Structure formats: structure tokens, C-alpha cells
Length: 364
Length: 94
Image 1 (cartoon, rainbow over the protein chains, first blue to last red):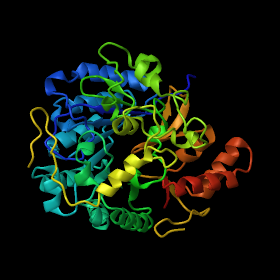
Image 2: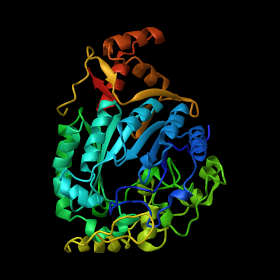
Image 3: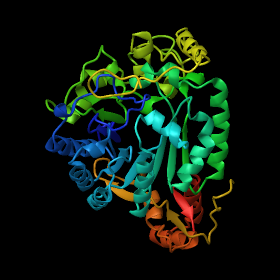
Image 4: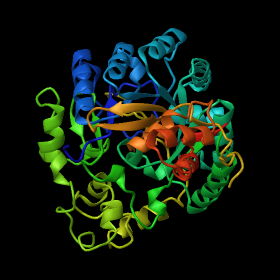
């Protein structure tokens, strides 16, 4: 049996999205609709992914419901044996589409919620969306999908984490993912406006920990720590090119959804190569596999088996060299970059730059 | 043990988390338990135990079926395994 089989594929079917969230992890240069892979390309890729060992498929975006062929893709994914999750804003999840997706064999739907406070939620999303999301959540429940609520946490909603958890339970969620903002793409651009204070982070962590116990057996709560406030970096998906791959809307295959910002790498495309070749042989996937690429302090550090030097995308975005230790790590002098950013979080509110496909990002 | 999770006893009726399902992965030649954002690769014994968690059989009955199949007393193995899976919330006590 070949080793190093991927388990999870995130298929970013489109970058188009009705929401404009300033924390979006999509790249600043969004891919336009006319450059997206065709239905038959995606189907072939899903078959190849399953043959390569992938078990879990995320049908993501942008907003995947903007693809008219979503039902067809979900049907194909199920037919080749993948467990599929639709990662959606909920906008566009009408009853006919939800019923067709159920029939196609889609198993799990994740709906993003911006806040328990409707006004703030719509200010974050940059669009009227709360009622649509509530209706979508009710449909997901009624049709019997597995149901996750996903909430990105940041300065403007972190104080309501308790209310947000209770709201997800009221919506009937099986799971809630509380993900503190990670600063990639639009999120990095908006970091000064998004970053919470240390006090906010500590209070919310306590509230989340109590809720995890209180809701145990009823609703699973996954709390993703804000890495800027941790002493060691996150272990991204078990290390580079280990378990996880992402396909961008145009067919580029990435080891991580933030990887396009590493401009020193080029990414091969499923239009030109098999997924297996890209996974096993391509330069981008080989670049940071294992630990041969590591510099000090990672190279001689016992933690390299725990966190794999942290996030390559974050190392590149903040230090200019993707082979550096993730600057979150307190064992590297690069940590001063994070400490400086944390200090800046004490500064007053900054405006958001909202995410748009094409054209200049508008200030709202 | 926190509130909300009943402890598994020999008379409990375990069932899989309602959003999880068993499958066989032809690539790895292994049984797998699939659920939202996760997968557990199972060994044959684990898969045999979970396949019997149908919401009707008690832990005791599952152990007795497998005991007969393997011609051995597997009651401790079965209850330990199910306790582990219950701790991960992948198996619920009925």
C-alpha cells in the first residue's frame, strides 16, 4: 500500500460569493467565473481523488451554490464513495435545491453564521443575509442532513461567543465550529480591524470551554484557538502534503487553501496533470514535505514532530520566506512580528475592506 | 464524566452518532467510520463491534455474538472499545 495517502479534498468550486466578509481566506486576486473548471473536470478530479485515498470532500468556495451543476457534482462524489460536505453561506439554498442535494447523496451541510446579533452579522457579511441563513438552517434540519454551524470569530463578535453557541443549538446544529480568524488573504489585509484583544480571547475561551462540557452529547463544539495568542504554531493539517489538498476554482492544486500567497511556488493544474502526479511528484507538494526543508530552530527542535514548524503560508506572508519557522513560535526571534501585531490590536477600530470579485475592493 | 453523556454499562444500547456511518475503503483495504469533517480507520474487530451497534442490541449482546464468532471471551475488549468511542462521542448510549 502506498504511504502518505490524502484523506481530505477541499474543492473550491468558485470564488464568486454573495457575501463580502472581510476575514475571507480566499486570495486577494479572486478567480473569475469564466476561468472555473467545467463539470466534467470536477467529476474526473473527484474520481481521481477517491482512487488516491481521499475520504472527505468539502464542496466549498466562494459560494458553491452559485454553481448550477452542484447537484450533479454531489451526486458524482457520492457515487465514487466520498463523504461530502457543502460549505455554504446558506444564501441560495432553496427547498428544491436542498431536496435535490439530499437525493444526490450529500451528507453534511455547513452554514456560516456571522454573529448572533443580526445587525453586526449583516455588517460583517456586507449584505442582508440573516433571514436567508435561518431559513436555510431550518431546511437542513428538516431534510435530515448532518448540520454544522461555522462561525469565524474576531473583535466584533467574540464577546458574544456564548450567545452564538446557544443560537447554533437553537438552530438544531449537530456541531459548531468556532474558528478564530486566521490571517490569510482578505483576513490578513483586514487584520487591524479584526484582531481581538487578549482579554477578549481569554474570556471567550473560558466561555467556550464551559459550553463544550454543557453541550456534550447534544452538540459538538470545536474551538479553534487564535494562534497569535498561543506560544506554539498550529499543526496545519498534519503537515504539508500529508493529508490534505485544495483545488482552486481554476484547477490549481494547493497543499493548503492559503498557499497561493506563497509566490515563490508555482502550482500545477488538474487540466494538465493527474491529481496523483500532482500529489506525489509536483514541486509545490514536495517543497515542504517531511522536515528536510527546515532551518533552525525547527531542525533540532523536538516539537517539529508536533507542529511541523507551523504554517508555511503564514511564514511566507509575514517573513517573506516560506521555509522560516512560523513566526507564532516563541522559540524563534521572528516572534516579534506577531507580538507587534498583537500590540496593534489595542488600537481603536479600523474600517473593513470588503471582499469583491474583480474591480477595486470597495470601502463601505 | 460530564453531564449529557450516559456511562455505557453492559445493559446500555449503543448506537453510532446519527451523522456517522460505516464504510469500507477499497484503497486502504480498511473499514472506516465517516462523519462530518472526520474519518477513523478501523481494524476488523472495531468494525465488527460498530456494525453490531444498531440501536437494538445491548453491550452484553454484542459481546456475546462476537464471543461466539471468535470463540473467546471478548466482553472486556468490547466494553473498553465502546467506552473509547463513546468518549469521542462517536458512539452514544441509548
